[in-house]
Amino acid sequence: MPLFAEIVPDTGARELRVVDRATERRFHALWLRERAPDPQTLDPRTGQRLIEAAALPLDLAIDSLDYDTTQLHVGFSDGHVTSYPVAELLPAPRETRTRWDATLAEIPETTFDEAVADDAALLAMLEALERFGVVKVRGVPLEDDGMLPLVARLGPLRHTNWGGVADVKSVVDAFDLTMTQRGLEPHTDNPYRDPIPGYIWLHCLSNADSGGDSTLADGFQAAARLHESDPDAFDVLTQTPTRFRYVDDDAHLESEGPLIELDARGDIFRVRFSNRTERIPALEPAVLARYYAARQQFFALITAPEMTLTPKLAPGEMLIMDNYRLLHGRTAFTLSEGVRHLRQGYVDRDTTASRRLTLARQRRQPTFEERAS
Ligand SMILES: [Fe+2]
Image 1 (spheres, rainbow, N blue to C red):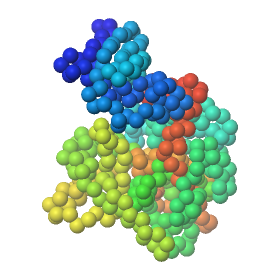
Image 2 (cartoon, protein in one colour; image 1 turned 45 degrees about the horizontal axis):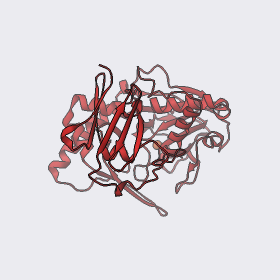
Image 3 (cartoon, rainbow, N blue to C red; image 1 turned 90 degrees about the vertical axis):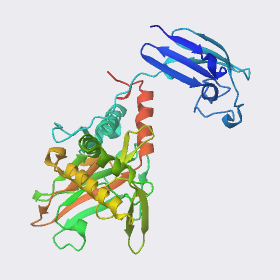
Image 4 (cartoon, helix red, strand yellow; image 1 turned 180 degrees about the vertical axis):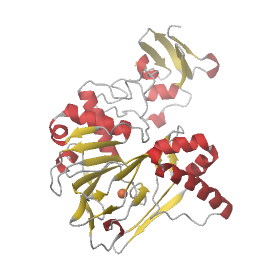
């Protein structure tokens, strides 16, 4: 069926109905009016609104409608007339991120020098990061702050109470857990912060002779599997708010949220998992019983070998990981001598996303979401 549009008669002319092939959408007159794509309503450079939307009359109606295959021309009862591209009102379906398990053939890779110097390589890296939640960067300078020239291509490094780029160092004579040679169970970093760090940049300067592999699991895949196998357990983890806390002499950090967080559409938006810092309140025992059973199922999924990649970072390699999605840990290792020395930094989500989207726009290249098949 070709494009069809009408002012819906029984709504007092306050709704527009648009049908294009299998897609049908209804639009409220105020929604259309407040985002009229013209320079009287929206700043052409930034898209910021120039009229006060909350002051528009609630009985605003659609007075006139005319359309062809690409544009809808709409007149409103306040006298404003504007045109909407059909493609913006009825956007094409979008590709979604690729969930993976241990069968993922390889982690997407890029070269440090190329990503620093070349916009196309940087965009390819950011696309892979958004799609898979992880990329490996080779050829990072073997210096303490070697990652910084690439960080600078995206935005600021996040500074925390541990500074900017911080040590993850294991020595033979360890006094702290992260400095020992024991394995670390899968976790997301710092769920006690607000905002939680968006991306973890983990840069290897030296590694152990044996063991010391990174472990990586796709938390979105694990959450989706839980949803399939036990929807009630999935609901418990999305609906039970737990707390996370970190306290030392200089810091007291606390934040709250569920282990599996959904967005307003009901899609998985973020996972949290941090055994060391989780501090759930003393909820009703029956509520806690359901929570603990569901958490154990989720833990079984994120530690299952069939869900886990175990890349070993060599000196000069770096992983960039989506901390809203990936769980990371490490296997136990032995140090006969020297140190296992990694450096870690955090970079925010908004600046990372902004860089990807502006690079795609500047290069007139669709993002992977827009290349829906
Ligand atoms: Fe970590």
